[in-house]
Length: 280
Image 1 (tube, one colour):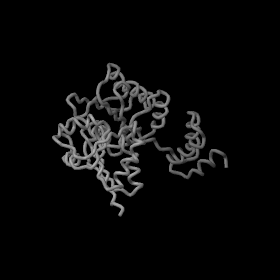
Image 2 (cartoon, one colour):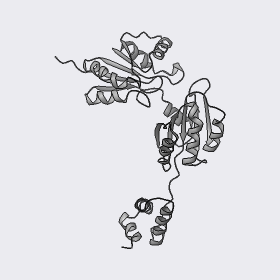
Image 3 (tube, helix red, strand yellow):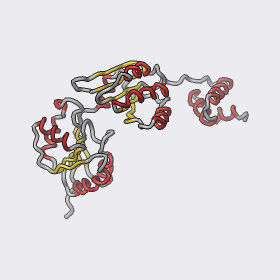
Image 4 (cartoon, one colour):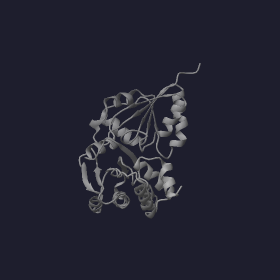
């Protein structure tokens, strides 16, 4: 007979202090049939700190072997085993290995659950002092300057608060690129070493944070940036609509996009603005 599928458990691990580990983490580590870890050496330190003995199999699951190892772990799940996935810090699959395995498990109708816990994204957002009612997570920016600039240019009009991860040695360059694309006066916060002994949160306009980062940044970094201010509305009389489209075209926006944006801001049908512009 075909065995009942097992369970995939995504477990959050501390981003700093081991005391922040969720209580269920120790139980899951001790009872899982398979523990898949981003770094088995870090897993060993974690279990030592928690006083836990792993009785199941331990396998590595990191960026370099994620594609090849996913089918192996899926086979274990289909054989009825309980597979626990942990990464170095925070929640698996959030800028960490895990997405491929989750997608494969869902496709195979395997139950996927989680042990909630520490999250650098939510922690940084909460302490940033910036609006938290609407936000988006952008992960790591591209390493190459050109690609990074293009990504940020696409976020220039994003009205939600944005959260980024960044390597300490690239923090100054990332902040400078943000200042250029989003404006040096845009409010932001750099959260360094969250929940650790040397935790630091620097808040201020991007230009000021660039100057601060020039002195060197150490530790794990999460950057929170406020969203763009809501665009001002456009009056819906013919002269105002035409002027608004012309203004955007003069700034380099294609006419089609300018018409769509102006219609949205003025609260009128797109066809009405199109007809005005083309003299219909």
